[in-house]
Structures are given as structure tokens and as C-alpha cells.
Image: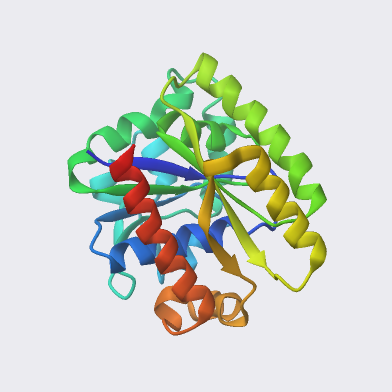
Length: 256
């Protein structure tokens, strides 16, 4: 049975997409079967996985509107080693089209149930707002991975996200948990970042992943080549950190 995780944070620019594609590539590298679902109309996770969003014949949009199954709409990223349920601008229209339909927040969950046995992990890249798309992701997921920078504004955004997850847990998805907080773009030379990191560990304890993703130029360059950093330059510090994070995820799931 696949473990389904949203990579979510209501604050923009915190590395959600970078984390999604690199964790997917890292999990594939350590022998896991992975499906990456792009729920952001910008389609960055799709492009960053080596799939051209402009060439998609079917996408997550068709799956949400129940005009295609995941088996029909997914594409395999040969270079990255995982499957992609891609997104493009069409997905922006899904918000409006889903307003009046039945089970609108459970469309993704029902679709994923059909391919459940084919994957070990399903990773869902959510947009930075609490929209119907994000809600579909949260209703389908077993847990949420929260990438965050160690800055004070990030702590405020985290409070909002925790409240949202509690509401979804109470009303729509009793399985939903915060799996962990991932510190990204971390620079230990900046005193403030170290202080916020210590606060996170003091407050959230073992919910903070041991893995820390450093600020790394090669990770930032990789999307322009249409690849995750883990594939683009496996020797880079950031890439190695994401592979270590993938290994930690596998261990954490086995112990759950």
C-alpha cells in the first residue's frame, strides 16, 4: 500500500517543489516506486521532472474531472526514475469546475486508490494557497511534509498550516498527520537560522527531520535543465542531503 504525502506550506518560495522532485528522485534512487503528483497550475514540478507540461495530452486536471484515470494520465520520467501525474495551466480552471460537483475534495483520493498497489510512495506538490486543489491533496494524504526556512516569518506561516491540518483532520481526513518539518535553504553561518532551528526542535521535537537541506547553488540551477538536483548533480551537497532525507523517510515510515 502506497504512503501518500503532501508537501505543503501556505507560505510561497520555501522550496516545496524543489523538495517534492528531489525527494521523489531520492526515493527512486534508494529503490522505492514513486508517483509524483503536481497539483500546482504552474506545473513547475512537472517541468522539473523532465516532463514538458506543454506536451501533456492528459494531466491531473483530467483526473480531477474524472475524464481520465491516473493510469491513463501519468507519464514516466526515464531520467528521474519515477512516474509523474503532470499539471499545466488547464488546472487553474479546475477550481471553478469543481465548485458544484459531488465529492469535490475527494476526487484525487478516489483516483489514487486505483493505483495504490503500484507504488511505495506518492508525493503531492501543493500550491501555496489553501485552495480546492490543496484540499484534494490533504484529503488524499496520510501525512504532510512541511519544508520551511529557519526564519521568523516562516514560524508564523507554520502556525497557520498546523491549524489548517487540524481542521482537515477533524472534518475530512482522520488519517492526516504532520509527518515532519524539513529545514531547507539552511546556512549555519547565520545566527538567526540556527536560533530558529533550535526553537523548532525544542517545540516540535522528533517531528523535525534530522536531515537538513543546505543552501546550494546546484539545486537552484537544476530546474533550468528540467531535472531534480539529485539527478542533475548527484555529488552536490544539496543532492546528497536530499538522498539522506529519502533514506530517513523510508526508515520513519517503517517505524510508524
